[in-house]
Length: 238
Length: 238
Image (cartoon, rainbow over all chains, first blue to last red):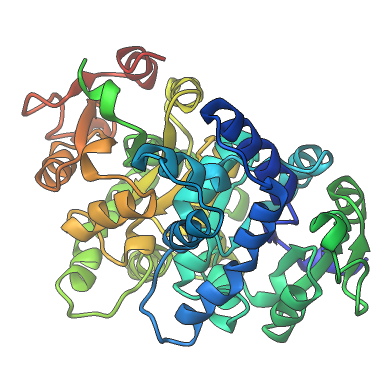
């Protein structure tokens, strides 16, 4: 594989690629609800919450709204869903706890071992639309051994805007071609490739549970195409 | 100690506080020189290089110069010193290797153990005038287990400008009072305290070798005053 001779850093999409947000939300909110005596269809709730993710970022991407971090967008979406699901009587502390479920997401089974192996040879970091505080706390919670936490907030641009990828490479003093984006989403990889980054597709066919409609496989001949971080590590010589 | 009840993140000054830049430069450049057959007073060279550090950043701090990362400032200072020390015949690759000595600095003996202990309870990260790429590579080289790499570049302001401290807290979604700056320099701590951060002084009386003139001890009653990262860990309940 030619890419591994030039690549100095692997930067990772996080939601869906590194962590299993859907199962994590269903489990975490289910436990929270049980403890509080609050009932809801937590799978539908999780899917609805994620469904509000792209529209919320679009307000910022288009410039209709000034820079706003994902924690704030998540909270605004949550407040809408609490109305939709008629979940009343939650305190501000409860709502804050629920919103921070995105800080408590669980890695896929192969994630941590793969990252540890890749870290021995490459700089590994995030290139996520999550904000720095969210990603830092998630890493501590899940044991993700990042060397560096980068992404939309450090670039002040949400993926797939080019600035998100280019600013992340620049913060590492690297040319785009020395950085590989790892993602479970073909669209993210396409935007990264357009900026000159190398690309690795890791299939996560269970990300959306029964509602998964795309990204079952690579749409293009990415530099690496695989289905786990351990297989990615092997492909990258680790 | 009251501070440890509120503090969620410890952010560290790096040059002098975490790593021993002077001995590292003297050793590294001495080996480089021996390998190349280049002789110089490397201790004086190291001291001169560090002496150009604050004036170079002042050009940026005052706005006379647009934002410029420390790797570039270091290289400009190096080019001046190569003339002053009449070190001719170095290739561009040689000069780049020498400039990146700042990526290869060694930690003080207590650094890594102290950081590992603190990491178990707190977010730990940099709050350094070094750029993100420099700090990330230094961490890999020296085994510094940062959760997050922050500082002048992510704030677009060199310490001791307030923005350097305030933006670092904000990137972690923390109030200034929830962040503790750890530094071997009273001036850095004074600027951080002015912004509302908590403060820990760790004495590094050998930082400047025989030329140390200040910072032998705490000038003020900082939240923690100690002389090693392991003692700091103990003071912070780790």
